[in-house]
Amino acid sequence: MVKVLFVCTGNICRSPTAEGVFRHLAERAGLGRHVTADSAGTHSYHVGEPPDPRTQRAALARGIDLSSLRARKVVAADFTRFDHILAMDHGHLVQLRRIAPTGATAMPRLFLDDAPRLDGQEVPDPYYGGPDGFEQVLDLCEAGSHGLLDRLSRESRFPIRGSIR
Image (cartoon, rainbow, N blue to C red; front, top):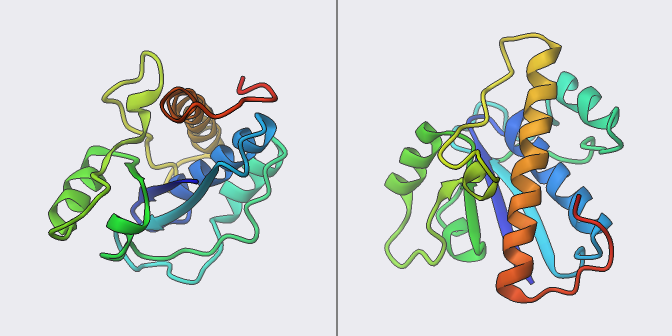
């Protein structure tokens, strides 16, 4: 079982979207029993809250239900509990690297580094913008999740039964 943690600031927009999209695509590809996902925030602003309603609406329009997710903050144990810790932007990456405890087995990196032609790019925060920002986040999370699933499939030799695309 490969465990993936997606991280943004408050864990109500970008990282729960990435978690939901990744799970959805993994299930569709027949990899649901081989991978698991969670999400967290670098800050505790929204701990215990569901994803932003705009995030939920945009995801649900694509068949992805985020309503059961609840925000939480990254904890030290995450660095050994997960195999991959994926930051939505460079600021999160810096924070995650700063708080990584000695003995961490998962070293944070940017989520979009596995997406073709998006290496080094960020998933922008849609919180203060309009509906188009939430759609853009979904598009980027799909690209990042496809790339990540491709990578995990190659590295772990998971048997893909469905379509990742």
